[in-house]
Image (cartoon, rainbow, N blue to C red):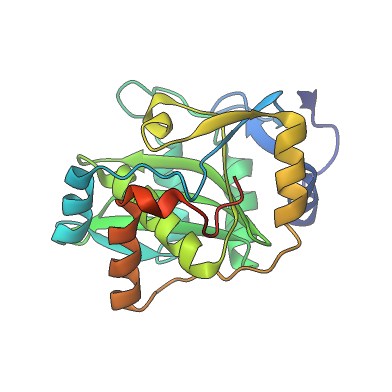
Length: 229
């Protein structure tokens, strides 16, 4: 972890991600950014995703409307908001500004969940080549962040992505198959992914999307496929 002593720009952010670094602020109100390069890195193997059938039913029920890149600014703002059990976050105003600019440039994306026209869950991250760097997620109703994650993985598989970087492994992510790997192993996967083309899919064909969502709940899907791990 090193203290920032120079201006951080969107271009610098992309070069940092390519090198395996990611930024965080100490607190929501902190005015400094730090670059992290942990010894153990969280990743979620795309062919090892664990989708419980109960959650699949929720995903397919239509109780939540799911979109991508409909309101990136609102999604990152919601991730930055305090919530019960999370009274402070690492997303300060500069982080918001930088990621909104990366979104404008086509490198940062969001997946949103809506209920009765209200944003109730979602996530955002950075896409570089065939790697997606997940940054943060939030949920205001049951399962909303989980549904967003399932849709993210389905879109990544449809678009030919290879690496889903979760930075760290939380209990929330571990239930879906997230694992920790050593820094050197992570950077080898990163190098193999960032220069491979992939396509971010905002609005997949509904039939293709449903087929992919259902396939994620099948253990056989973990054999082979697009996952790099």
